[in-house]
Image 1 (cartoon, rainbow, N blue to C red):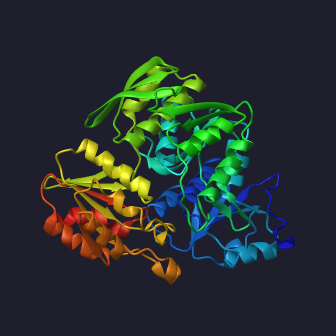
Image 2 (image 1 turned 135 degrees about the vertical axis):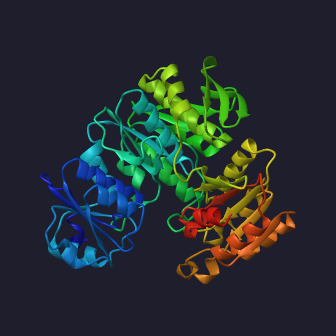
Image 3 (image 1 turned 30 degrees about the vertical axis):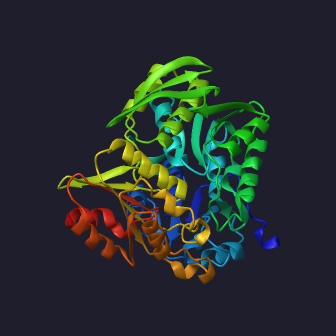
Length: 474
């Protein structure tokens, strides 16, 4: 299309405007650009904490709403968020004015990754925890990495770093890039090392089926340089097959006896998880980490494999694991009242829900697990996983399901039914309840919760601030 000819980044950029600046990635990019000396502005439809506070503290001017006049000063470059459509008023003005524009991955590559070793973490699950932990290991090793992560690292109080060191850690997101580039974001990154955690069907608004998802990851692996390292989870047959076909250096990890990187002697002793690691059949080290769950141990093992390839010693890796404080919204204990633990997690895919509940069960074996779930993503609001969700809650004692928000954006025949999920759970012998809104869930939890319960709240959104509201009521 002729009108899209300005999808490029000029040589001498001094001012940058970001459309939809309040997204996690866009906000981080804006702060990085400001820190790097660019003049930065932005706009978004809903400007709210914590992103507005972060941007304000960084000295970035953010306009409420999308308006053509936000571009009247003529920025050298416009970065367009992936949630922004061609019909956006600022996009229309941008095209009419002939302003150069790009996507987030393009800007990240050009201004921050270029010339460094890109460490790309990909997969359907576990990207944020894995990339955050890898960033912390590199930071503690004194390598001053650049990074952009999908969650706030508690150790550093931010989800980004410009970094002066030789490496940049980035989540390789399989979601589409922008309205003018419908390919996955991760195809924009050329890794020196990559982690592939898992491949399952997700993002039903972008991908048609599992084969469509597999094709995207296959394209990523095929594009990796021959000298790059690909660390893949050997317990996932799709990942194992892709790694086996890769022309770069492969390294599989997991629990299997014949895997090059292997977990063994796992022991839970809250708040610690203890485990041993073997490398090519020989002991590599004994470690402990303040994370719970089998899935997190696999994430940790992948990080160990990459860190070892970079040359970080087992002792430094061990120090980093033991001092890792976690990520906001990933198994984060938001508070304890009357002996009742309120935990927040980002889980939304059926596999993530199952693994998160199992992780909580491994740490809190003698407590009731009250699972609270809001189906909020584009996939979970659709019925594609209607039949899979019931088994995901098998290890919970009680289940509280909210009606999906924003259902009017989903065609009637494609909508997920929370009522049906509650009925299916009851049929499996679970105490399960359906609620039309968040207020009703809070009222029921106040009645049912008792000391020594763990209330595990799972949503990829704010969930109407249920965590703080519940803690106040408790």
